[in-house]
Length: 161
Image 1 (tube, rainbow, N blue to C red):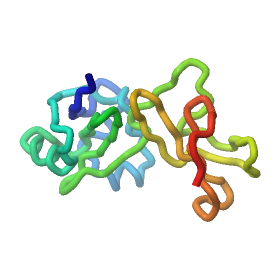
Image 2: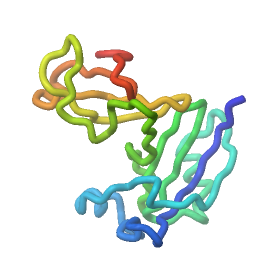
Image 3: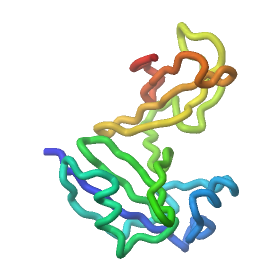
Image 4: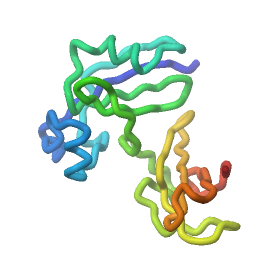
């Protein structure tokens, strides 16, 4: 049975994450700070309805959320992560990284060669569905002007478009 749930994570000031404490998403981006789960600790978790939106959950945690927290939503087996800004949540990627043994792809992947596709590719985005991590690969030179490819963490092609 799949459980739909949301968790709120707060910066762990006992880690290098203390640099993130109460910084807006824009400040984090400008300073090129990494937002990773190992820099946070869970402070709240609750079950959510199958059709609840991020906006619904955002309102439910209003009294406990703070800028720099991360809201993680597990809905129907798909994980989504949101950085807590002052007025609204900002979707982020790379917060939770699964690195199964033998994984070839991560969000840091660059200069990757994909069989049947020319040039070098880089990971542009990721998602986790049913515990498996998938990566949206973008051509390093042409970016979104050319086809994009979805690979699993082992480099197997899932889809292209």
